Picture 1 (cartoon, rainbow, N blue to C red):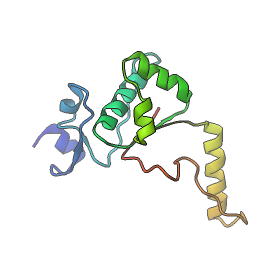
Picture 2: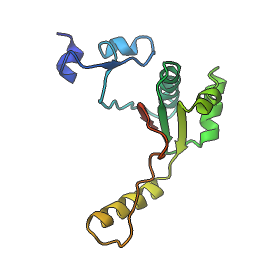
Picture 3: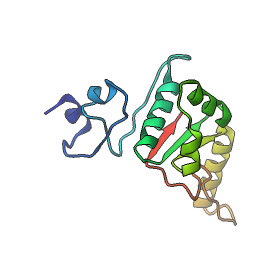
Length: 143
């Protein structure tokens, strides 16, 4: 049994390959499907570029990727990808990549509204606004 199997459990679970040399091997054949991975580091340590690289690799495999950012606007993230030689525009047009900048304040309001609705304090129905209705991602990256 590999170390990652002891950490993540079932050895027969499907694994998602990130396409980043060394990283998949570090996790023992990739990220176990359905698991979350926290990428942590200081400013400028490469977290965004790392996650954008995963997004690119997943799109190239035909997966749908939702990339949510709390800091960088969509246009800037697209520029980052182009600066590293990855043009995301074709993937966006194909419907494989959806990049969305979120406001922490908007999310907070949405959560408050959902909680109020659950307590029957609201007379209207509230729909969560985090995910687009017409986009069902295979991979979710939150930056």
